[in-house]
Length: 394
Image (cartoon, rainbow, N blue to C red; front, side):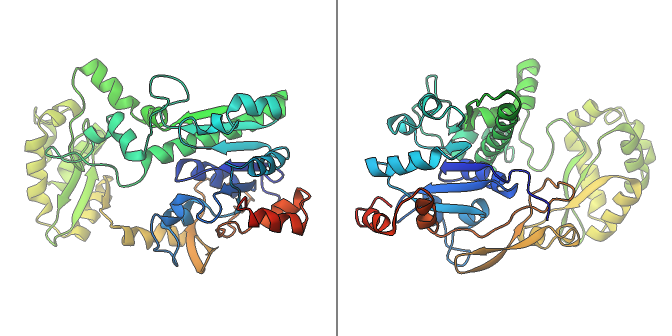
């Protein structure tokens, strides 16, 4: 079997919730050994977000496969000493502790670099480790609000949050790529560089297009539901059988084909109200009314066939169950069974395929499942481990 790309890399993570676990799970997918340090007894609080997956949290199952769970009370000197022993053998340390907590535990980047020069520390923060908001708590929806994303999401009448933890996912993705970059830099230069990612700045990057539009256009893009603020026609339209089809016209060639082959109104392509992209956006309501009248005369299947034949991008609006049963995921074998405490569940393979490499998709650990194994590796005797348990250190 071909070795996974990160085989031999050890990652230690004092992590919770979504952002840091997402980063480290992706490292585990590539073969890194990820030792997840949790609180004795309760563990990562994300374990209790819900109980829908064989009694486990859907968040925790998604984010924590292929990891080893070790419980340590880091508020005790014995717990911190054990963590030091684990870090001495590690390549990467990841934490997304509350503001100031890493420094209080002597686990900030500067302190770690002094003690472990070859270790790559990665901190995931809310608003950065410096600056006026360094001590401010940041949860996903708060960051969606602060970056202006919520003001762009929803209908003209009402704002809405995105349906997934997008700020956490963005930060976890940049932490993952930052760690890979730091590993490469260490391998080529011998220097271990610290990585820091904030939820706010990760999502701020994703807000760059509306930021440019607003700064230079004088007004921010409007909320248009399933439509697009700067492209028309682009949106969902009801069909005769009560379904909705989303369609998108991206250029003039498609617009001409759409008018002649879907709307059966070839002359509309040259109507001054709709002849260019900006004109179509300016007269969106009138254009949408024409399309809505036409779409109601066809079933979803009939309209989809017309759009496909004309080369117009389109999609039905799936619910989550329809997504889970999507034929593309089935035909491309994207689901793979993963063991969880209490059962086995299908999980999606990582989206980046490496030729000849099968991703690691090992079980989701129970709280402290690997504590004894890791402590034995550090040289702890069974009697010592029992004493640590009795004292509540592990």
